[in-house]
Picture 1 (tube, helix red, strand yellow):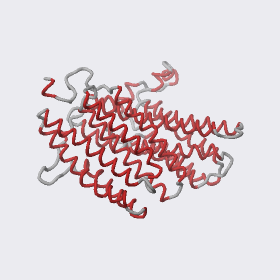
Picture 2 (cartoon, one colour):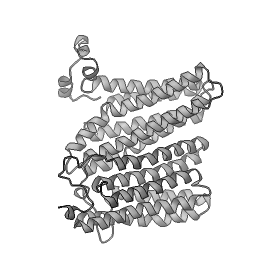
Picture 3 (tube, helix red, strand yellow):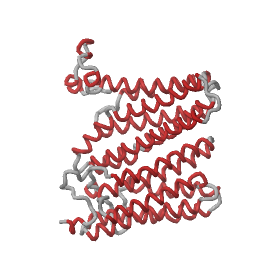
Picture 4 (spheres, one colour):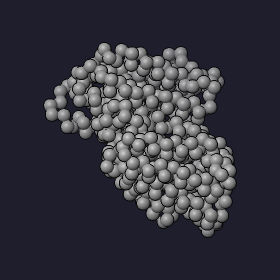
Length: 419
C-alpha cells in the first residue's frame, strides 16, 4: 500500500487531513514576506507603487497557494516532501529579501527564483504521481506546469528588462497563471482538467488558508507594535491610535473566524466531488482580497499612528478605507459561496454601507477619528453577524436571547435568514 501511494497522503487514514508542523514552519517565511509587502507599500504610496505591490502580492500568494495544494496531496512526513518544503522556504525567504528591490535592482533574481520554485515543485508532483501510478493526477499537473512554462519567459524577460517594461511583463505572466484554474488548465493535446482531478481534502484546505489569514493578522499587529515602539514621545492620543489599531485587527479576526471560517470548514469537510471547486473559488481566489485587505489596512494603521491629529489624507483613505473594503468584500463572497445561500450575508452589506458613509465624510475628519470609524464598521459587521447567525447570544450569553424575545438558533435556521 505504501509503495502504491508513494509520497502521497493516505486518504483513508483518520489524520490524513491534518496540517503538519513542517507546513506551519513553511508558513513562517511568509510572515516576513507579508511584512515586506506592507513596508514597500508604505514607501510607495502612489498609484504606480500600489500596482507594483499588488503584482508582488499576487506572486507570493500564488506561490504559497500552489504549495498548499501540493501538500494537500503529498505527505509532508515523507523525507523528499520535507526536503522540497525546506527548499521552498529558502526560495521564499530570498524572494522576501529581494521584494523591496524587485522593480529596481533585484528583478532578475526575483524572477528566476520564482520560476524555478513554481516549475520545480510542480515537476516533483508530476514525477511522484507517475511513480504512484496516478495517471489522472499526473496529467492534471502536466497541464499546470504548461501554464508555468508559458509564463516563465515573461517573468524572466521582465526581470532583465528596464523598469518601464517590467510591470507589464510581470502582470502578463500573472494573467497567464491566474487564468489556468479558470479554464481548467486547458492545454493542447492534454485537454482540460476535471473537477474530479482536484480531489483535495477540504478540511486541510480550509485550515491551511485560515492559518494564512492568522499570519496576515499577526503581521498587522507586529507592524502596529513596531511603529508605536519607535515613536519618540508617545502621548495619550498616540496610545489611543495604538489601541484602535489593535482592536481593528481583533475585529477582523472576529469577522473572519467567529462563524465564517468555522462554517466553511465544516462545508469543506463534508464536500466530496465539489471540494476542488470550492477550493478554487472560495479559497484560492476569494481569499486574495481578504488577505490583501489586512495587509493594506496595516499600512493605514501606521499612517494613523504617525499623524493622528492630521486631517484624513487620500493615502489614508485608500489604505485604511480601501483595506477595509477589500476585507469585507472578500468575506462577503467567501461566505456566500461556501454557505450556498440564496443571498449574500446582509451583515456584510450593512458594513459596506456604513463604510461608504465613512469614506464620504473622511476628508473632513482627523485621521484618528477616521480610524475609529473603520473600527466601528468592522465591529458593527461582526456584531450583526454574531447576533443573527445561529444565535450568537446562545453561545456567549445563554438565556439572554430568550429574555429579550429573540429567536433561538432553530428558529433562525428554519427561516434561512439573509444575514
